[in-house]
Length: 116
Length: 112
Image (cartoon, rainbow over all chains, first blue to last red; front, side, top):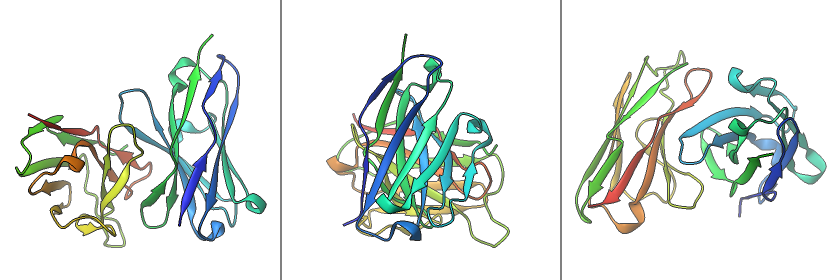
């Protein structure tokens, strides 16, 4: 069965970077894009961007350019998102989701907390 | 950016009632290829969002037929007939017609 297993919660300091992962299983990793979505506590969802694991091609929400960097490791069927220059406004749950014509499978989410 | 405005923000219901959620877009969601990329997701408490409806009115695999999506252009509705306990949570509309893709603010379906 299709699964997206995300890495564990992160506690980080302002100004630092963090890299979270999303390991895919149960399907051919290179056949579907992976998208990342942000959800601040008690808030709505925001689309960050997407990556094509086959080509490595990416598309970003302009708001997150310079903040988020999406990469993949095809050998381990894992997608990564690095968040840089963290501020308290980056405190959120970050989801990965498989993207065909829609987000049909989601990871369980990673809580990233930015605090001094 | 396309703004999706959902109403109401909260919808108190009695189990077995019908519920209706509106999603209005700041511009038409008809893509140049003729498709309308409007989706509905449900986020149950403590869970990741799950897909209910894609391209306005198509139910995703396993979604009960009491969920009905409709609409066109910039005005869309999700109706839930005979609300059941597992339907409670926050509903989001989402558009993938225009870049950047955007979500609505959410509608919380809760018990009266």
